[in-house]
Amino acid sequence: MTRPGGTWQNWGRTEKVRPQLVEYPTTISAVRRSVRSASARGRAIKAVGAGHSFTGIAVAPGTLLDLSDLSGLVSVDRERSRVRLLAGTRLHRIPALLAPYGLAMTNLGDIDRQSISGAVSTGTHGTGLRFGGLATQVVGATLVTADGELLTVDEEENAELLPAVALGLGALGILVDVTIQCVPAFVLRAVERPEPLPDVVAGFGERVKDADHFEFYWFPHTDVALTKTNTRLPSDAATHPLGAVTRFVDDALIGNGVHQAVCSAGRAVPALVPGINRLSARVWGDREFSDLSHRVFATSRSVRFREMEYAVPLERLPDAFAAVQRVIDANGWRIEFPIEVRAAAVDDRWLSTAHGRDSGYIAVHRYWRADPTDYFAAVEEVMLAHDGRPHWGKMHTLDAAALRTRYPRFEEFIALRDRVDPERRFRNPYLDRVLGA
Image (cartoon, rainbow, N blue to C red; front, side, top):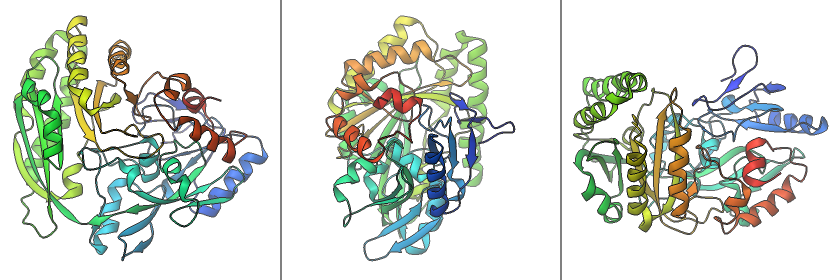
């Protein structure tokens, strides 16, 4: 992600910075040297993964540590089905690392380009009311703290810190490895189909309770929900994967190529958007297939976009979704990107959007060349009225004062930050805003 001239920018093109220094550590020892060097010079230091956060959480004005080369499998605990991974390991590379051991990650989101450390640190999640976000799969971690020392957090050492460190926003140190609780490899049977939107919204709470994994997409200006229901099956279950031609047509040609053209056309002539969305709702998402879990969870996304996502208490999701619909209609906007609706289980991670409550998620997007400001601001107002919490890696406007009231363990997290990084070596403008300087 570092370009000639030294400018780093994220995938969504919402953030960029020219760091004073860029380093590419390949070992944990190299990370420690970098942190000590930055501290000696009084310079802030930040680690960067794949750059898939839409917020400035990874922006590094001082020293930027690109962890791309700090990647791979460190060890496997076969008896407990646990694996230790270096921080820069990309999610899409993990299945091949786990396959020889017959293991899989419990749940994944719908994009797998992120690094494991970036994904857990920002609260990345999938869908399924019996499954938490990726940070809930973390049972151990190693941090390089501000003095260059190692802080081990697991069942035997500093266990009380795990709920903070597993989802730490990069504010507590440089995460250099994580230990993930895996499960035996499994197959997913996927059923994707269009259904009447009012019925899906009204029954969302029951659908996510009944299915292993359920979500839906809604193209604004239509009355159709594109539902996705995934059922977990044993690893030896018969599979019926998508054929190469079908996958190319559905995902590459329609899902990305046609959608790219649709977004460009909608930006040039907004009046076309409702008709295009109605057509899209007819040609997308009517298929059944089964495959290994990671091949079903993740999809290819080549159309660049910007995103905001909020978590609300599960029981409030239908009302929040209806309010978003009213906002779009009242403003006469022509929204070319579908809205995604998912769910996740309650968890104990201090800064998790699902901390203390089963949660429903509403994610809104705009094509990256379209200005999302008014749309996102209006949706954010709706989410806040429904006790929403913003995804840390996706666009929002909240600051520490607003977030403090939404997280019961917020003050404890700040106290821990004061303890492990009193001089704020891992600060950046985003963390100053959401956690306070």
